[in-house]
Image 1 (cartoon, rainbow, N blue to C red):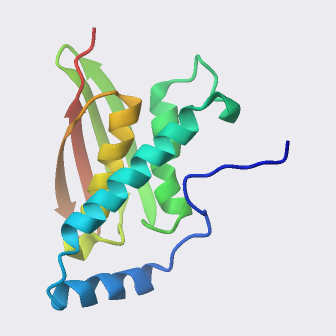
Image 2: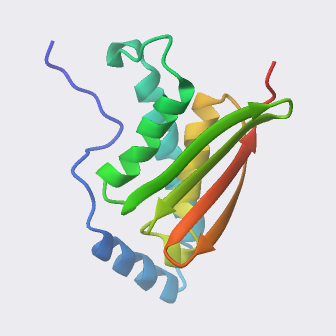
Length: 152
């Protein structure tokens, strides 16, 4: 029974090395933006799908905001952002509205392609919809505004 399945090895990443590689690829003209967006999206899909499997024992009455918070906190665990300042999820007649404030995402200087992709991948699985995502950058803090999914 000791089998463990995870969407990626959770050993963490060295942010400085990742930033260096990212900036080197951009300076070399490599099309890294779409690659990182797709990588983040696939990782978000994988993380959310893995979390929703019953063997991970997320209670059926668990608030989706707590499940989402756990998935977003994986960015900190993997050393892809320094911290999470705020996560707020609400619903209105037009759908879900989610605000996420991250401190120092590793891809900040590159326009946040991985982080955007990761968040959109999570939303695709958790909210079962494609969402719109806007980001406001204030020095090293980024606040994402995510909207999507009609509430029945």
